[in-house]
Image (cartoon, rainbow, N blue to C red; front, side, top):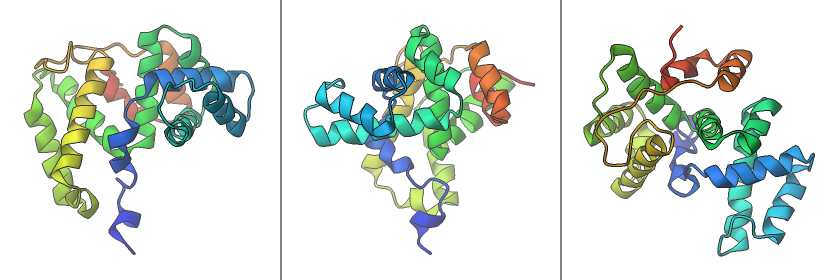
Length: 205
């Protein structure tokens, strides 16, 4: 069996092109709310070039990513929230969806960000991400096989995601902000039995 097939981080390398995709998620969620089938959603996005991407191939690819993430939420109320709630709430739900899709993001948000919240150590820097990757590389052959450019790109994406969600004031900030878990997401996390996600949102049982 290949390293790719047995690694829990299978698929996480796709972060280099898939990223956070908030506005694409919002557009896709609105179309799903109309009751469209997945193929119809993709067709509407392509025909209207709703993502404003240069090629049809890239539009189709990212449309599929957004659909997978939204369905992974396992809660129509969350899909509706992504579509219509204020940006800060919708982004928090999109981060939860990203954590469910990519084990790498899940582990980072829990073992690094969640742990910092737990011990009330709010300093943050590239060192924290570098240590995280070093530990993962020691444990997982797939991640160990990634090129330095792939890891650098994913590091940049993680920092950008933190800034987009208010964990950092900007991508150069060296201090974590406290975040507040929205009640809509809290209820959904409980209903999905995903209490593991709580520390990432500075919420402890």
